[in-house]
Structures are given as C-alpha cells and as structure tokens.
Amino acid sequence: KQEVTQIPAALSVPEGENLVLNCSFTDSAIYNLQWFRQDPGKGLTSLLLIQSSQREQTSGRLNASLDKSSGRSTLYIAASQPGDSATYLCAAKLIKAAGNKLTFGGGTRVLVKP
Amino acid sequence: GAGVSQSPRYKVAKRGQDVALRCDPISGHVSLFWYQQALGQGPEFLTYFQNEAQLDKSGLPSDRFFAERPEGSVSTLKIQRTQQEDSAVYLCASSPVGYSGNTIYFGEGSWLTVV
Image 1 (tube, rainbow over the protein chains, first blue to last red):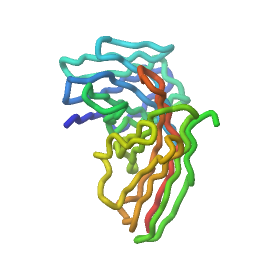
Image 2 (image 1 turned 90 degrees about the vertical axis):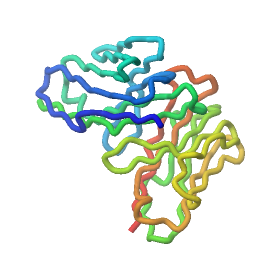
Image 3 (image 1 turned 90 degrees about the horizontal axis):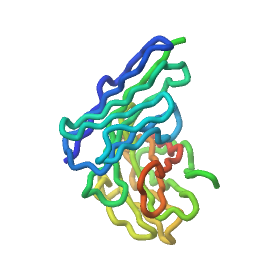
Image 4 (image 1 turned 120 degrees about the horizontal axis):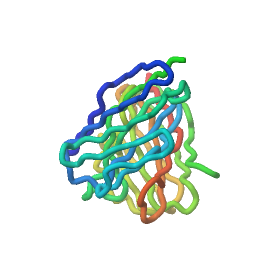
C-alpha cells in the first residue's frame, strides 16, 4: 500500500526566507506526484504536477523536484511571503490506480511571519 | 457554476442520524471523487465515479457509507447512523476525461460534526 509522508508537520519562517517542504512515498510505481495548497476552510488548489518521467517543475517562485529512486519530492518556495502561509499537501497517483485516485501526505502547515 | 460546489458547507448531526452530502461537479467533468479529511490530516480517498459508474469504492470505511451519481453529474454521499469518528471534512473533486495534469478541481468541502 502506498504511504505518503510529509515532514515537518509544521514550519514557521520569517518573511523572505526560502521554504523547503519534503514529501516521501513508499511505492516508486507512481504515475505522477502533485503538490497542493490548502487555505483554512477551503478546498485544495493544485500548484505543481510532476510526471514520473520528469525531474522537476517550476512555476514562478515555486519549484518541485522528484526523485523516484529515493521516493522523495521536494517543494521549494523562494523568498517566502506572508501570503504563502497555508497547508501544503503532496499527493501521489499510482500507475495502477483507477482514474485519478490520489494518495495524500498529512501536509505541512506553513506560517510566514512578516 | 465555475467550480465544484458542495452542500451543505457545515452540518452538525446527532449521533445515529443519517446525513446526505451533495456535490455538483464542474459541468462536463466525467470523473468525480470523494475524499475524507480529518482535522490536521491529509485527505483520504473514499470513492471514484466515471460518469454514473462507481469504479472504485475501496476507501469507504464501512457499509454505513454510500455514494451515488445516478445521472453522471451530481453526486451524493450518504452516511447512515453517524458516529463521532465520522466527524471530518468531506471533499469532492472532479476532472475531465483524460486527466493529464493540473486538471483536478476540489470543492471547499462539507464540514460534518457528529455530536
């Protein structure tokens, strides 16, 4: 059974510092790995998706890397801002999973202090 | 509507009561998912529909949970004889056929509290 783990569970940084969020997964037979953002009381917003054949994806200040051999993905957020405060979730889609079934990590709750 | 719509947003149920949670996916989206998210945890998969067909219900925690999508559009998640451990946010998501990337959309969830 695929297990996805995110460490740390919570992170607090001063504004301007770079953020590094970690995600590990046990089954390397993934189709893709996706990072989401969740604000309090809201649903999930997709940030970046990395296909299994890719090593990284970038969007603005966000960069996500994928290393299937070690079962790890990392989300980097450059020059953090208070508006980046949210919970960040990674989710893996297994090759054999029906449809778009995703296995989520527990999330990292980020606070960026002004 | 422009996004996935869920109702009710908040529901308080007495233990033993039946509840029904509704999801209106984005128009034309073939795939529909239900996830359960406990406080402070990531979402856990419950069930998946492709049109009206329920292709995967492996995540439903017990036979008290039932989901349907009779016309391939709106879906309802029903929980019978609710228990305190059912308290969670129930998230619905939809995606079009041929999902290939950032095309899965989540609703804001239905917050269920069982007292």
